[in-house]
Image 1 (spheres, rainbow, N blue to C red):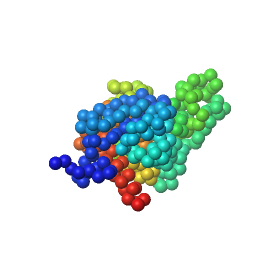
Image 2: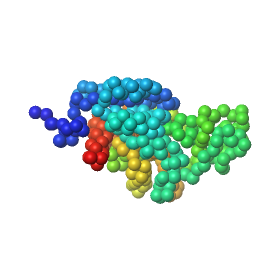
Image 3: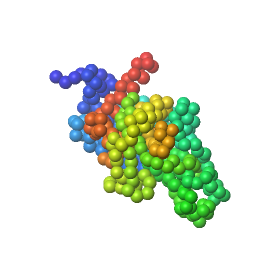
Length: 333
């Protein structure tokens, strides 16, 4: 006899009901659409392989509310990346429709997608981040916003979309001229930050646990969109070969950011470490509330390092979301 389940979709032993009506929301129209489709496909396949019989992939479009109303899912697995699935828009819609969903909620998503707001939340609590300033892309031709080398990144994008490293050698012209072509031209508001020399590392948080530290070693250039999602372009060292105190510092900072922002499910915090400065050289760059779930993605990789397979990872994210919704229902009476 199987474990009885309650209305939350969880059995008394904490197992998920295999008859749950699950929608995997993916795609959308952001620049990260291809990554989202890969993440969503991975989640759908994992759920079906683990015996879930009502799994519906939905490619996000403007009619998503009508589609969801027709399906009436028990839960939505949010596999979207970028706008509108990572900025609070989809989360707000699902809240209004009273449909449980995975990952972070409306407010957290709206804050974390905005790098300027994220700094405003985290820095006062002692989380070390590069100093920065928001600039309008049209003003770049009037002069550099800070001393070179510096990084330009869109305020509201992820996956290193639109990122440029402007060096002393003047890789985009010195100064940046109206004729210089760069990724900033596609965005109005940019965050300018000093370039932190050193090593690129990342930490995944699952539930309320920082998993481990991965070092990212691009084989050419920096860890941009192509390096992240093209097999063979970046070496992942997991766990990273760093001193124990440095690894702990990063995991502590990632968990603090996860908690301070109110993240749910899984998040991923990206770091730079200037290894000539010890712990003082560890800087949190950004927090991703909708981390990738592709075969090359870092959260599944770190979960495997902790003995959590891909399918179990997907189930744990869903189970946490359902448990959170059940707790909210109890609190609201």
